[in-house]
Image 1 (spheres, one colour):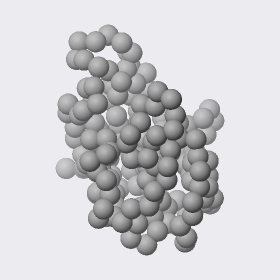
Image 2 (cartoon, one colour; image 1 turned 90 degrees about the vertical axis):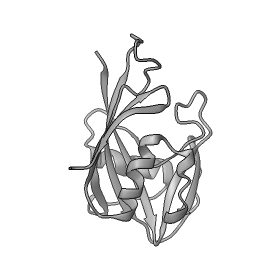
Image 3 (cartoon, helix red, strand yellow; image 1 turned 180 degrees about the horizontal axis):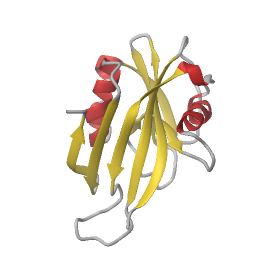
Length: 166
């Protein structure tokens, strides 16, 4: 039976730019070489909103009040570490709560996971992002809609997905 994990993901916005984390510092990092939003796992007793505020501070150095962070939806990533359809190794299913927050200034910040980089919204390096992120991030950046989706991965690619409220 797959194990379920809860996590958060945030995209910080400054004018027409978005902050992404290029994962290149941790050993054996599942996300190595990918651009991702800021976020991480919920700690025991933590709500998703408390988690994302903590993660933003830890990974990007910005401090927010709960009223300054906007809930934007959730994404379910199914069997994220399974290598083959027939494999019996444990898989992890992630329910990820998505947020955005606006900052009033761009800052540099060093963290242990990777390099933070600002991108114009129309210059996001989608070719270096996970397949699911390539699908939901543009919608997140282009609209104020609440998003929801489900992505089934095999190896590092998507084998099935659904996105939206159609």
